[in-house]
Picture: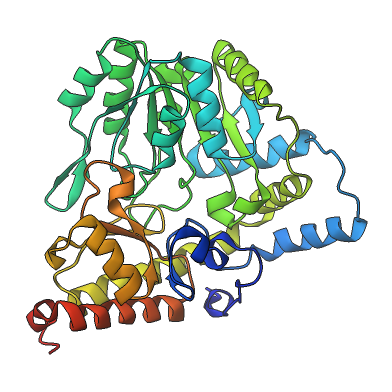
Length: 403
C-alpha cells in the first residue's frame, strides 16, 4: 500500500470547501476541526486527475452526454465486484443519490403517502420525504449487544399500514455501519413484495465494506424485487468525487423506469456534469488499485479509533462498523443531553462532528465521525476529544488510569 499518498496533507481551506470553509455559516466556531461530512481529505485517484487535466486543457465545457463506453465502465465495475449483470437500458443518470431519492419519492408516491425508513438513518432520507409532502413511517433499528438489528415484526406491521407505498433502504447503512446479509435483504424484500411496496436502495457506500463483510446488491439478493426496485449508486464516496455530481441509478423494471424518468424530467435536469462523466469513466476503468489502497488506509484509521477509545476513553463506545468510513460513537457515558453533547464536542473539543439526533430516533447520545482523513488529522481530533473529557468529565479518564 502507498500510505504516503493518503498521509500527505492537503490544504482544503480557502477552496470553497463545504467541510472546511463553512463552519461559521453553519453555526460552528471558526477553526473547528471538521470530521462531519461524507467526503475524503484525499486527492482523487491519479487516473481521474489525468483525465480531468486533459479535459481542462481542451478548454471547452459545453453540454455533454455519455457514449456506450461510459455504461461499459460502470457495468464492468459492478460485474467484477458483485457479480451483478447490469443492462445498459436500466441506467438513469442523476447529479446525486439524494436527488434520485427525492425523484423516486415524487415518482412512486402521492402527497400524504407513507414512506418507510430505518432510523437512525442518513438525515436527507427524512428531508426528501417531508419536503415532498409525504409521511415518514419509521421502523427503528434495534441496538442489541453492540450491533444493530432489524425488528422484522415491526417492519411488517409498518409495511402493512394503509398508503405506505415506498421503502428507502440504506445499504450499507449510514450511520450505523451495518452491511446487510442476504437473509436480512430477502426478509425485507419479501415483506415489501407482500405489501406491494417499491424499494429504493441507496448503495452509495457499497465499495467501502470492511474486511470480512460482503455487500450484496438488493436485486441480486432478492431477484423477485427486480421490477419493483431502484438501486442507487455513485462513484462519489468510493473515489471522492462528490463535487462532480454524477450518480448512476439502475431501474430494471420498465414501468418504474418510465415513472422515474418523468419525475427527473419535471425538475428540468438533463445532462451530467461534463467533468463528472470523464471522472466516472476513469475511476471505474482504472481506479481499482487506488481504491484498494484507500480502503486499507481507512481500515488503519478505524483501528486507531478503536484502540484509542479502548485505552484513552473507555466510557465512549464504538459501534463496530461493517461498512462505510463512519465511526458511530455512543457518548451516553458523558451524561449530557443532545444539545449539551453537541456543544461539548464543538466548543470544548473543537471538533465538528454530526450529532446523532439529526439521524432520527435512536441517534440520541451518539456522534458520527467521518474518518476519511489523514491519520495525523485523526490523531489530533482524538487527542482533542480526550483532553476535553479530561477537563470536563475526568471520571471517564480515571477508569482508564489516565488521571
